[in-house]
Amino acid sequence: MSVAAEPDTSPVVITAMRRRHLPGVLRIEKQVYPRPWTLGLYLGELALPTTRHYVVARIEGTVVGYGGVMLTLDEGHVTTVAVEPGLHRHKIGTRLLLVLVERAVARGATALTLEVRVSNRAAQELYRRFGFAPAGVRKNYYPETGEDALVMWAHDVDGPEYARRLATIEAGLPSPLVVQA
Image (cartoon, rainbow, N blue to C red; front, side):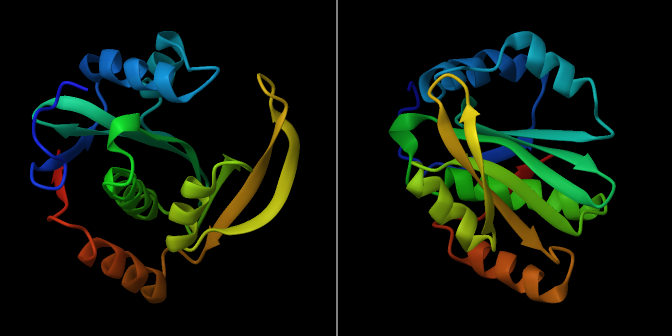
């Protein structure tokens, strides 16, 4: 990680993922996933702006995290959230998820779902703070390891109670949420 400043004191800027961000995204992807997505897969996702929304987190211009959501009718499916391993536990994933949820709701989502490795307790904790609850298990979902996926759902994400939850999460950030167009 080439960012010199601490993530708790330097602004973390969330912006729409662009082609120019993909080298940084792929660098992190290779660090955090045993079977990383390819450049072609990301290009394909970015080519579907009506049903996909991807964002990156940057510190001092360097990509330090990213996430995406796929939209189908009134449901959003969080496709990926990843953060530079050396920057875990600095609320970068929280910032990414706040923006993804906000964008999904703005596009008509009333519920959100995702899959997470059963062994990834830290991610499950993050998702639970956002109101995601376990709904099932997909056996052997991750073919590279044979690990199961926990399926989680958050319902009524377009309602006032959920908006209050998001406001509380955002208020707990160590610095203001900075989102650029």
